[in-house]
Amino acid sequence: MSIEKYLQLSEDELLIEIGRTVDNELGALPPTLTELSQRGKSWLADNSQAIRVVVCPKFASLARKHLGFSELAAAIGALLESQFSGTAWSPLAVYICKVGVTTFCPVDSDSQVIGEGDPEETVDKTNGDQQNNEG
Image (cartoon, rainbow, N blue to C red; front, side, top):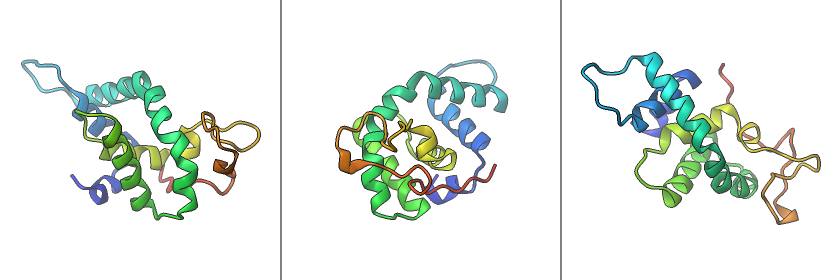
């Protein structure tokens, strides 16, 4: 599925897609949507710190490029794909954008993305993310 198709999904539907992507359990019956959503949430909880280490330090430079929503999702997907293997990163990248990158990436009181060492790479909390909160 393309980034554009994932952009049409809700956050819950994206969690299902993430769960489907990481689903490696074999069973007699296919997992339910609820089970896939739970697997997506669980996988995200288990892997969010490693993902933050890759995405959050790069967010400020991506934000300065004033990318559109789909371009930001594609850039985050490419960044994830370059660092990890074995998972389709598009649904996760769109999920991060829909949640809001500044929500996903903790920001300290000086408006700096935590984990970013360069003071030039700061993000204004009120203007730094490009999100499309649909729910």
